[in-house]
Image (cartoon, rainbow, N blue to C red; front, side):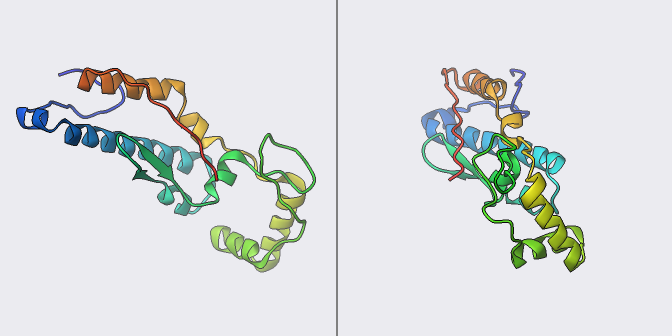
Length: 173
């Protein structure tokens, strides 16, 4: 059996599977989706300060033949790409805090996440919004890069005997 770089399991296609090639290919895609999800979760837990909710929200969703999406909570994109402070372009990011005022939900989120008192949460949120912003963590780019996609394509070619072009499209809408 071949020594796979990306997938850590051994594959073999039985005669039964040869009769239904789509099912074995679907299984390969699910295995790859699980690995990508695991790698993104691991990177998120290392790079993002959170209580684990963001890490656990990362999941794959099949969206057609031989493809899947990785989805996460809405604030993943802000942690990943960063948010500029009000009126500044501190980071190369499309996101920016709009107003200098701190919402009650923002302060409550800080209280729950970090155990801050109410006044400390409001002060921390105000400084973040107006002076520092949220520094980009570049989670997605550090995990899913050209080398990573080439490894996936190489393993798929080894298992199936077919040539694959593996692509990644970042959609933060």
